[in-house]
Image 1 (cartoon, rainbow, N blue to C red):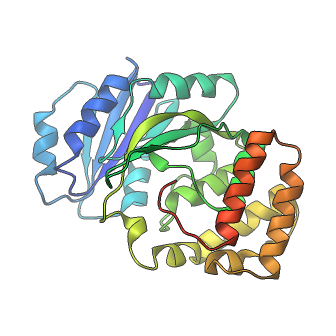
Image 2 (image 1 turned 180 degrees about the vertical axis):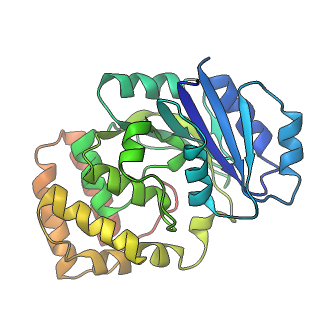
Length: 288
């Protein structure tokens, strides 16, 4: 039985999946499997995967296009490894990714993320090399989700304890919130481990996607429970946050962040305040 399963959902990824698969296989430890869930591709993606036949590569084919969340949950249900990770079919995995992430999980965390190097729009840019430990990680979730899904590696028990993936648009942010509520220790490591591709057809670039994702009732309930459980306040700022407007609610959020950030290191405090300023000034960025 594999110790680690990397889940890679794909829909019409013929142009990029071969490189994503090869880079992931090179980075995987010997006791790992790459589980690809093809979500009804019609562009020849399955044919590419058949030509990439590898003993540690397994492919599931959905009956039709079920969506990312359903595909990921199917992958979870179809595997039994101790650890699970994510990878996208259009990104590139760096060689040290799983060694770094698994070491952190074995040492103290239940789920970890990493930095990335953004590329694909004419500019190559790494994320700021700052480690966000559990407290700062949860503070960041109050404002936004800057933790790229394809850098996620976690203990399976904590993903399952939180209910796994739900059928919501922001399936990643929703899971992080529920894992935090359940007491999972999460962190973002400073080093980049994935080349994160940007392209015009990304779902988060679709007009009004953010507004729809953050107003789904199941997601709103998860966010409110997260705030009440971890910070013991009522998130009166939520409507202002979603609408990206100034208001009394945002002032309350700013005060909470400033108070909590006072106990963090100087560099982390600057990072949190920069993100708060980004939210407060209503500037949106697709580069996390």
